[in-house]
Each structure stands twice: as structure tokens, then as C-alpha cells.
Length: 256
Ligand SMILES: Nc1nc2c(c(=O)[nH]1)N[C@H]1C(S)=C(S)[C@@H](COP(=O)(O)O)O[C@H]1N2
Ligand SMILES: [Mo]
Image (cartoon, helix red, strand yellow):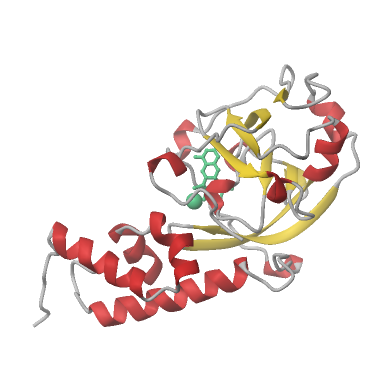
């Protein structure tokens, strides 16, 4: 007969602590804030409350983390790129709400707003952005909840855009406000990373609503929650801006 045991809150707390001990200090720093019992269950595929085979759960989790670290911390600090055949279909949707609440942004009167330490704070219409020189990447999106997926995004290298608006590259942070109340922020080095993309397309079509229409920041060296969708405002600042998940305990750095 299968033994069923429901973990108490304090068991769950210690299981998370044990799981953390398996990680090196660096890795611990990366994932600590994201570790929850639900997260461990999702990323190991183990139902801890049904089968409390803790050793098994922890070793699977450690392997998952090694794989994640491998993706995030490559030698040259470039995220791996993939072939079109490797694209995940269907590509998953994720947000802090369900599909029924995806923001419906009207592209016709959309203007991207620029604030803070920049020379030029004028607003950008979509046609203006579509006319800029575009590049594309096929990279892996890794969500802290324990899934990952390969997708293709196209758009303007963010470094190019920041140069164009005369952003103060010595500023510490770039922050993003989104149409759905989501917000996040990154350090300037990540903003200037060669693979960081102001993405306007997904899979060769205009970014669909579920994946962040009219634009998202695609950062393959960072976890999913550092990739804001439905961007409305970009601000260059020295004041720490935090983020929707980061302010609830997720690691602010969230990547490499
Ligand atoms: N505006 C906005 N951006 C967001 C989120 C969100 O809820 N709202 N969720 C983040 C998280 S946690 C993930 S995993 C990815 C999901 O992106 P996808 O729907 O393209 O898979 O978007 C990130 N960016
Ligand atoms: Mo995520």
C-alpha cells in the first residue's frame, strides 16, 4: 500500500533549507529567493505530499539546478542559441494572472515612454520602432517555477536603442513599467549585453498579446521574471527600482 504523508509547514520549511544546502554559495544566492515547496515540486515533478522520498526529490532538484546554471553561466557569458527545429511548440504563456486577463494594448495610439537619465525623452510609436534595424535570436527562456522553453524573438538590440536615446550608460539601473502593473529592473551591464533585445516579434510575427504585445525585453542570460512583457515605460535611474516578484523575495539579479 502506498504510504501517504502530508508535509507540515515546518517540514516544508526544512526541506527547502536542505535543498538549499545542496547548492554552492553562488547558486544558492541565485535561486534562494525563488525556492518554495511548490517550486520544488514543479521542478522535480515529485509530489512531495504524496511520496515523501526526500532524497530523491533533492537529488533531482540538484540536477535541475545544474542544468539551469549551465544555461545561465556559460564561459563567455553568452546564452546558447538554438536552431529553428528546436523551438518549443506550443510556447508556454505565463504571467501573474491567467490568459483571460492578458492586456489588450491598442498599437495605434501606443507610445513607448522614456524617463530618467537620458538625453532624449521623446515617445516612440510602433512604426518608428519597426523601421529600425532588426536582429533575431533563438534562445531558451527559463522560468524559476521549473520549466523552460526555446523561442525565437526579433527586434532592436537594446544597446542600440539606449545609444539612440542618449541613455547615461554610467547609470546603475534600467527599469520597466508594463501595461499589466508588472514591473522589473536590470543592471546597466545586462542592458548593454549583446543578446539583450527590445523584442517586437515572436516566431517571425508581431509579438502576440500573450507573449507581451507590443514589446518585451528579451534577456536570455536572465530568468523569466526579469523579461518584462507589454512594456510602456523605460526609465534610466540610479535609484534601485526593484520588481514585482523581486519585491516579494525573488533574487533581484536573477541570472548571470
Ligand atoms: N508584463 C509582464 N511581464 C512578465 C510577467 C508578467 O506577469 N507580466 N511574467 C514574467 C514571468 S515569471 C515569465 S516566466 C515570463 C513568461 O513569458 P511568456 O508568456 O512569453 O512565456 O514573463 C515574465 N514577464
Ligand atoms: Mo517565470
